[in-house]
Amino acid sequence: MATAFLTDRYELTMVEAALRSGRASCPATFELFTRRLPDRRPWGVFAGLSRLTEAIEDFRFGPAELDWLSDNDVVSDRTLDWLSTYRFGGQVDAYREGELYAAGSPVLTVEGTFAEAVVLETIALSILNFDSAVAAAASLISCAAGDRPVIEMGSRRAEPMAAVAAARAAYLAGFASTSNLEAGRRYGVPTAGTASHAFVLAYPSEKEAFAAQVAAWGPGTTLLVDTFDIAQGIRNAVEVAGPELGGVRIDSGDLGREAARARALLDELGATRTRLVVTGDLDAHTIAALGGAPVDSYGVGANVVTGMGAPTAGFVYKLVAIGDPGDAPGTPQRPVAKRSAGKASFGGRKWAWRALLDECPRRLGPGAPSADGPVWADIVTTSPQSPEAGARPLEVRAIDAGEVVHRPALAEVRTFHAEVRDAIGPNGPLVLDRR
Image (cartoon, rainbow, N blue to C red):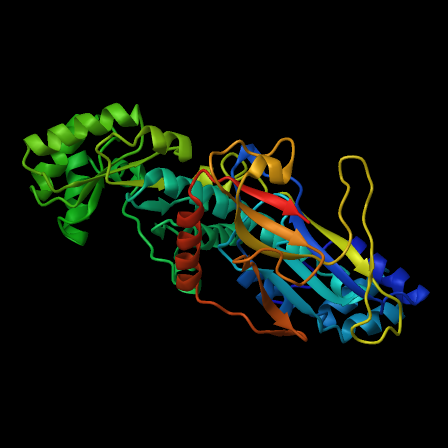
């Protein structure tokens, strides 16, 4: 599907005016960053880069799109001609997908002409805001879960295509599997799922429902035991499947208390190896509170795909440097910046590195974290030279001269995120050092 219409009209009204004034061809640099992290989080997780580069490849105005723009008088014939041959020919540098970032970190840099770069604003923000929000929530949840696997089960709480993207983002951030089949087919995310309460209610008795499920999937299946009474549900499950029952799932009640009771009863019935899965409005806080409960795995839905658990990453896409029509390649661009109250930006193309900073409060000034010892920082400068010995560059070239040159496999992204998160720790802090 062409992605050019997944955008806001004002992108094209800007192109129209820029073409008329002769400014459309000006060399320009845009950066994507967030001014603040939500919920006092120690860091964000950059996700969605692979989806964005694919969307940029498919950003085309075909006959259907051009006809609609013409029929609705959105732009002039001259702009329609320009759009008919649109292909992004610039370059994109970005943090690697799965990387952690601080508020103010330039996680995406787009360089090209003003017109070809400005039209990518909406698609970049749409993909990266959503995927990064889900990934941050999923990463914090998987941190809280420790070595207990988490299943992403949020498909029914999101728009269908957003649900697929959410499953991918949650998996790269540490979830073990998803309930969403399209995410399994499209991205290779492991899928999991057994039955709902509707299945149990469709039979004359709970035992008959369990028997039907076991007959289809064997005793290693996971049975949902809280439709009526949890204790009796467990007894029925073990009676039907035997002590080799794979797992039981509890979706309601005081999960910590019910998990303890369920484990004791399963052991009493001889089902000592039966796994205990809990679901039901879980988030990082409730999972952390269940750390001492005898739970084997979790299922998380709404709180990883919706605003409750995954508030927007808050990314903005801002012009930071601009040249003039006809500038020779390599001509320095003029830094530009907003000065709006509460929304001021910093001009000039930035480069970013990660390093450990000693004496963080002294280095960064008032309001810096009062952590003991060194603190991880994104060091951001307007020079491409490394500012600190041993600092790690954070950006990679994702698109070069319009061609995608960075296509890591999802498994590689997932491993990279785990390594970065383990190095910094679930509580950070990760700060910005602007030089």
